[in-house]
Image (cartoon, rainbow, N blue to C red):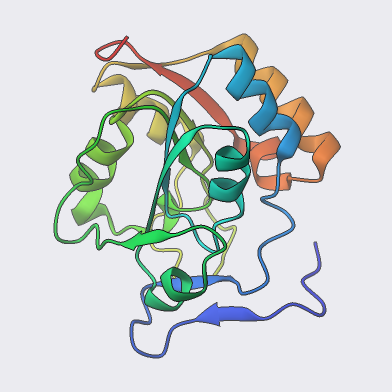
Length: 195
């Protein structure tokens, strides 16, 4: 994987935030996956948790969905393609009710002591589409790299179950899009407490 020609957005004001690519991360852009989940799950609303530069939010909005983009890095909020709300998960969870929570390349940036805020925010959706960085993967402010099973376990405690066949499709579609994070660790979960 190469980010040649792209600029990292590490924040000098808040070193624990950011680290995304200013121009948008080509390895997270997954239009085939987003089309699939939109149609398969009959989505009407999305919470883009850790929306970065707003590429996913803009895509979902373009498909006619109501989108709430939430981002912790102020410069991302200021420069987002889609209007985003500045929100700090260290202060509490996002409170919303949506069809899908999209949380791609975010969870590894949240310290474990704020895990409840993160998980409660993710459970705002009837469905969750997420990725996680694996142990040893490395990256800017990766403070909670965990095996995928860790996230499955914590979300299962909150009533979320992996949609196994849909997850397989998501990973195949992501691989075709070049969205390597979704291809490697992408999960689609159903929140049985919201169904």
